[in-house]
Image (cartoon, rainbow, N blue to C red; front, side, top):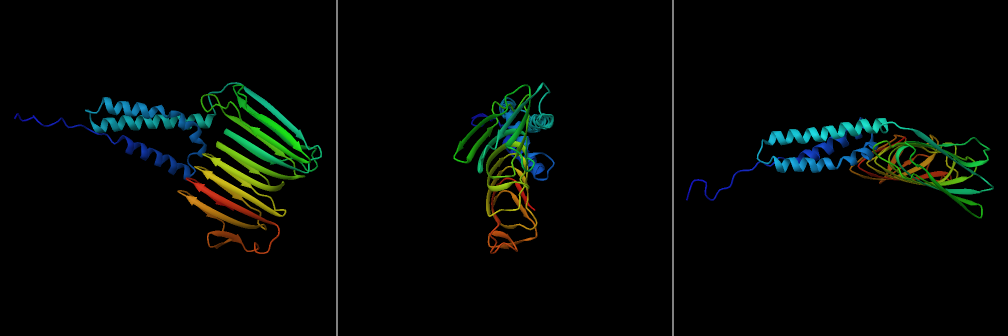
Length: 303
């Protein structure tokens, strides 16, 4: 038997997946520290072919230095992250802007239910002046003439049903939309909102809020609640999102929270009762907010 018979040439196995996990960990850490925006994922996921490039390099150069393969892996991931950050901050490579508007009159409505689905952009909800004749006024600003808003409205008896949906949205290149939606203060409103890879600012302070269901996926959001009229129920699900919830100082509130790989920061004016947080004036209050929060890889602050 020769010296080399029965043996195989040693191979270098670069820890590509370990580097990728470290990369994800660093990105998530910078997002929880508010260095990077959570909406970055709306752009970063488009760089998934970089993984194929990295794996191909690792296979082709498997007999080369581990440090060389690791260096190439870090360069590819770093360049992808840098371009994604730049793209996310500039909302594309420019292009023409187009504006869509939508107005729906109150027309004798006694209440309304609003369904909103918004993706990849900036979304603001505020209130119309008291006494306005409209249920909602929306301005949608988009780049490159991308159709950004689809609307529908129906009415049963005195209840209005409104749907706003972002359609044909582009993450990259040249996407980026901005919605400003102003709603009436004069009738009870029920909101069902889904937002992904977006900056969402929801100011309900002057509205008559009946119920809120909010799902946030990979974005930053602020929510200002009004003083409750009766029992206001709100459910907020934050997935890879940074959320700041502001509640009226004198409101009676109970917070039920479930946190999975994330953080929850509740104001010191709340008292912990089992798994819940309640304000000192909660017990016996007829006007109160029942707030349920679920956090998955994100950060939620309750003020």
